[in-house]
Length: 373
Image (tube, rainbow, N blue to C red; front, top):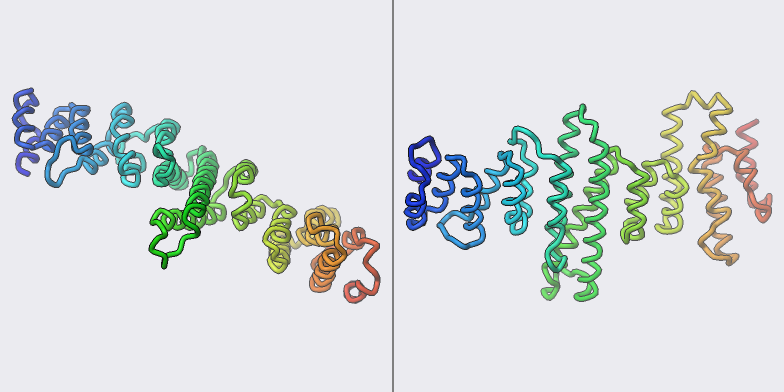
């Protein structure tokens, strides 16, 4: 320890070949690295730490990992950073990402170059090391957080869009791995000792990233249309219905959101509540516009309630049987009765099919007449 303190401080010890040879012969490898660094021979010092990390040389209590991370987190030589961060990222990705998410550096690294560097660690040779898949995700989270604190940075939405797309990529990769493990071992069962730990790890990661994605959708602004397109192009587009619903709701794509609720999630109560929440929100936000007929008509055309009524009256995906049609029509009639004062009556009457009788609509019509009496 005294030797390490000595060589790390200002000293007159020169890293000559003789001195280096004697220190290495004594097994003082960390002190050797510190001596190099104290004389601005950074590459040589980093090389010693990488040899410790690779197990080529051994010193008790030293593996070169924390030393490399600590040094590169403050270092400004890009070439050294790309070269010597690689072995740490490859072997200790969760720790190595700290090199790029630390704010100790005087000038920030070029984000696009860091992302390119991290791209090369997306998976191991077998494509199964899920830790590598989180490197870009963690770095983008850092960028988004940093830009949130610095409102003057104009690339905030760009990073948020990149983060949303990276979350989708990670989730899709995790689901693909989960499908493979499910095929090999069946669904994960914590009571079954035969279930591999990798199955549990993937399942936990999926839950973690899904929670992250939902929070992200609620909190940040990003190119929602672009993110929705990517989401629907991947496997998770048909698997993660809750997230799909949140994305559609965020961009105001009410018809698409309601189609998810009615046809895919088959949750009619949730579809009704989706419409009602939007109605209340819009009424609070611009209730004074209700006195202007032009504004009212414009709003009504994109009313979630009207979209939902149309889905039930003219279903596309429920088949042609009379029973299915009748079921949807009955749901629609009940909806009209419960929300007659929330839905524009003129638009409703225009879209009613001739197959619905006056007797079926009697309660709804009586509610309309009483409200206009």
